[in-house]
Image (tube, rainbow over the protein chains, first blue to last red):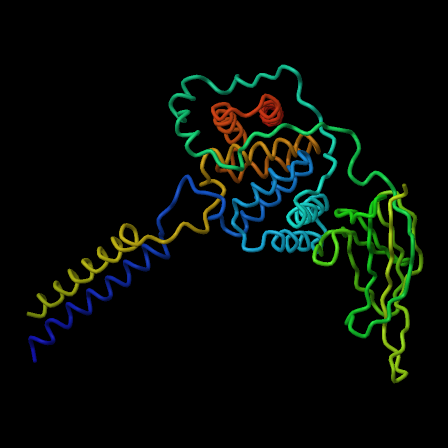
Length: 283
Length: 114
């Protein structure tokens, strides 16, 4: 009996020690990695990485390069992740440009042949001092050419720069072609549905939509957040008793006094309807 | 006798801790996940800096660019750009891309001198 107790205290000590060791090595002080790849980033840094990719996409207008960079994150649903992040930014009311960029990139995920006009940039001077901070010893000691070539990734592929033009994507105004009331009991919330197409009739993502209320308060959102409906689609949920003014594009005409239309079902009961606005760029 | 049992118990705990650490750090370490931008490989960092530099070229938002760069290099934006320039040169980035990065580096350096 005494011998059994003797071995039990050793066993108990070993189990306690192993648990402490595992807690420290796997949870409290896990191994720190270096030279990692983007797919391993924590969620907050993944969001930053997506944002940077989207911002660069606006400047480069190189869809394939942006998609290659995005692929490095190995998101299960890249478009969905971009849309979700764009909506979060819009809801927070911050980083409007980033939200637009993310929405555009989400549209590009679903339509890789999509072409956007790059943002205007301040071109670097003709002869910058590129080598002033990159001394030869530093090159030799920190990075060897073979190492870099071996680890070159699609994200770093050098592609021809687009030609920079001064026109932003949303320069041209959009005309309201049609405003219609939608009475569909299947639509659970009263929506303002916006469909934007270009002069050729192709849906246009990333178009700014401003909605305001006569008594103050304004919100901004963009087409392209619901590519499963249309790349040129956006919607807004109306509140009972409120009226709204809406503008599509930077210089579009203001549509006044939009409010929830009353619809009637088969039994004669009223229910809130929705509004559809169709916009097109003039030819 | 009681003292011997206590010593044995402590030794068992120490051996157990050692075994747990070896398992967690050597045999079966935690997977590569939840890493930070700072731990990215140099070529990814260079591409990241390029993207930030291109954005800066379009919006001239230096504080925003610095904020994004500080995540790469322990709150040292200028070092992040300089290291990226070295990598970019070795990787054969185009001249215009190097120029974007150099302009950003120059702007950050000027900001630091103010």
